[in-house]
View 1 (tube, helix red, strand yellow):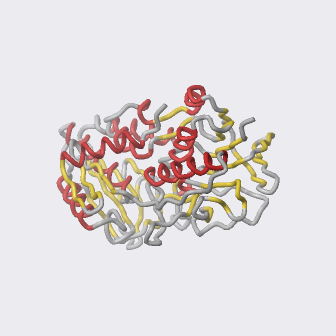
View 2: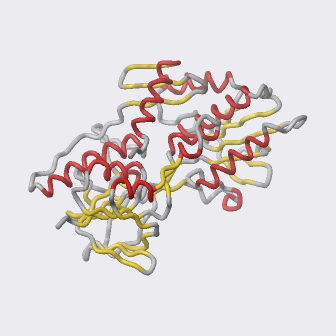
View 3: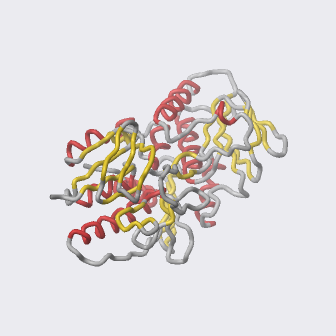
Length: 369
């Protein structure tokens, strides 16, 4: 009989693992959501470049195609000693468990009133409502409009540029419809290469996107945000893209996690001393060959899933586990119509070539069945 494998969380890591295992196990996928949102494509949906069906991936359809069990419930507790996953009024036994439940949007508690005004970009309704609100604002005449995006990491700048491109395509002056990008660090794209930062800055400047740096958001009101220097920025529409934190599942055992609630795993993605429990994707703390923490990306999740799929197959064949270095192969950033910037190894790319490569890599990362 096939061994029972439970995967918690569908995302990039979980679904890639299912694709790679090719029915070697009896697989059950548990996810509290009915669909996966292609996070790397949200900016293109907001800008009208793709349809909603291109943005979401329904687990039920996927399970029928791939012939695995799908349960749309929330995991409430884990018992690693007895190999049990608990859900609402239900529990399941497993032979092997993979935790790949991803991450949630990080909302700093020190921002006053944030709970009343936050919009979680990982929720489909928030994304759809933001797009509808933005499209409605495009039709308003004779009114100065300001859109605030908090967080100038990869997602934040791509969304800001995509919206600015749509404003330009509708022949609306940036003086009439303004985008303000707020980042608490000293620069946009904090932690990225200067080449990527400078090329992205050029495009933001060309679109007249206002960038506010090195100031914390301290308070949010119905129509304005207040910064740590007491500056007030008024807005008609806002979106928060402030990074992510891991969703921690209650467990019966003393499982080690880091400050971001990521499970600390070994080279084989195993948790603590439990040889049949693994963790991949945003929920796992993994290191680069240089010993730095790997950022939570679709690229990294796919790499981890590929390695783990090989090792799960090796279990069935009584072969030893393999270790493979996890390394970010490159970064590509959309910069509007037919434009992108990228750094692949030491190769610097800009313009249409980078845009074509960005579309190709997005297709590779997209969940397919």
